Length: 68
Image (tube, rainbow, N blue to C red; front, side):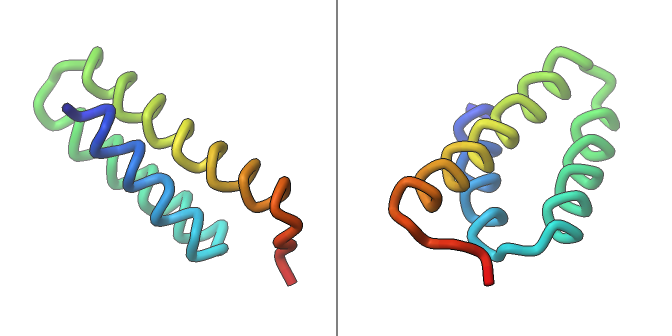
């Protein structure tokens, strides 16, 4: 479930087109997931988040939407 949630979060954040926001959300995600002490969940959250960002950026590139 955490992978799906962070995947969608990554897609939403990448849509904002702000590198600072992407890094801020990634850092907050690491802190929140690490607070539970389960590093497997941290790795899953980071992986899902990165996949969401990558899919959004690749889709935008394929559709011809460039960051202006």
